Amino acid sequence: MGIDTNKTLLLVHEELNWVSVKKKELNRFGYKILSANSGENAVNIFTENKYIDLVLIDIDLNTGFNSIETSGKILKIRDIPIVFLLSDTDKKKLDKVEEISSYGYVLKQSDPASLNALLEMTIKLFKSQKEIKKLKDKTQELISQKKELDFSLKGANVGTWSWNIQTGEMTTNERWASILGYTLEEISPVSIDTWKEFIHPDDLKKSEILLNEHFIRASDYYERENRMKHKNGEWIWILDRGQVATWTKDGKPLLMYGTHQDITTQKTAEKRSSEAYQIINRSHSVAFLWQNKDNWPIEFVSENVDILTGYSAVEFMEGKVSYTDIIYRDDIDRVRDEVIQNSGMKEIQTIMHAPYRITAKNGQIKWIEDKTFIRRISNNSITHYEGIVTDITKQRQLEEKLLQAGRMEVVGTLAGGVAHDFNTLLGIILGYGEMILNNISSDSQNKAYLLEILQAGNRSKELVQHLMDFSIPDKDDRKPEQLSTLIEKSLPLLRSSLSSKININYKEKTNSSTIFANSSQIQQVIMNLGMNAAKAMENKGGNLDIILKEAFIGKNRAMTMNVKKGNFLKLVINDTGKGMDSKTIKHIFEPFYTTKPRGEGTGLGLSIVYGIIKSHDGFIDVISKPGEGSSFDIYLPKI
Image 1 (cartoon, rainbow, N blue to C red):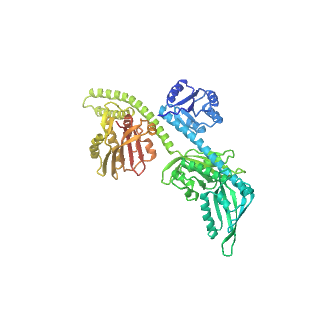
Image 2 (cartoon, one colour):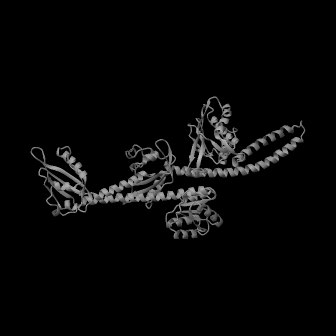
Image 3 (cartoon, rainbow, N blue to C red):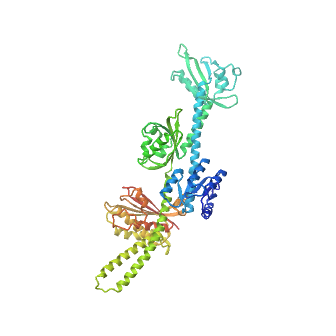
């Protein structure tokens, strides 16, 4: 893996031992680390080092300046991405982060790979935003140049010419000659042949076609942009316009008058604008120009808007769809409020919206980042909003996966600790219960009560064992196994357990399915997911599709899922049941979370599945929508 040696971080934290550990971890990813143990020290270091790429600061910093004061002073020196270090996700701390940083936070206990992924993503995002700003400024500069050029051309002298079409004689003014770098004396006498000598051969052919169309009255006038050779040998662009003024008695063109205008500068500017426009269209960002009217009518939008929204630029500019139509309904009021509040403050030129969602034409929900520039005129009234809108859906999904992985790790640790303590207590309860049972007479009225206590205790012990399986799955008894064989062994039992209304379809799309596994645990996963799928289809029946195929997990996704890159086996368990919404998907692997009625199930089945697959160095993806069924995609390393 190539290492970028040009990344410099300023790490601000009071605990020197913690800083020392983080330095070693981040050095492995190619970072140069500068550290400070106080706010004042951090500001001084930042002032002296202009090549710092990112500031990582403890939210609890309280030596000298606190974290908020330190961040504010740093941002006054220059714009820089600031990420806060949090020990937990306390709301007050999160509110403090939102006050000053649009780049969020990272938990102190994050593993090095996850921390590196977040830092790299933040640095790239910041650099991308700077490039977009430069591009925007350059585009605005070119637009301004074009306006100035148009004004200058209107006031400039133009070359004039008259042509006797029948004799070929021409008369021109001095400006006509000077545009080409000559004096009038140098090119006199001037005739139509003089013009033909200067014009580019390709343009001559096309101009003659247009002239002949005008001569037969097929067009009201002649106009064409031609290249003509300057005295210095370069080709310059000339806007050539003319019209026949008099005709012979037999209807032939006689005298024609026209102008030459040097448009070389204009053509160059158009080329640069076109290049800038092409750059925007090749990027992930979309350029918008909104009018300051109800629903923000779109005056201009770059052509790549169809990639983001599914709607064409023409649909937006013709008003067939408005921008407010695509903003997600739960976000529209907030976006409006941000525009209204910022627009009301004359000193504000830029609106940096908090990320919000849009609904694409195909119904897909996308997260976007919107940086809007306010266009004001002399009396400070607003005419337009110029925006750069960037699709950050993948970035948000990555952040969500990292957060979910962190939450599951915390929950697993907590579950393991709680289960261990409960197991100890249950051991005492069951032990003494057994002792009492052995010493109580068989006809005692209390014997039935005691048996109920012991039965409940044993059920609790099983529950605790499930929790321990989730937190620390047993890695013993693992050996090379054929995943296809484990599936085939599970199918008969699964079929006998399901309703006849449910069809099971198994497809194997690999010639080799060897994994290093505990066979009983993997079969437990298959049975658990199969029974869950059946439960989702118990009313109407449906299809349970089980598919085994190969997959390659690249570096980026491997880092996201906290696995090693390489060849995996992908086991898909797909049903046509009632499906789940995104809120449910976020919690389904958490212990005791269940959508079943009270008293049905423990809420530990999917938690155990998660723990088993995680302990096998794999991961699970869940794809589901209400009414469209669910797909559990299990990835296990192939050997």
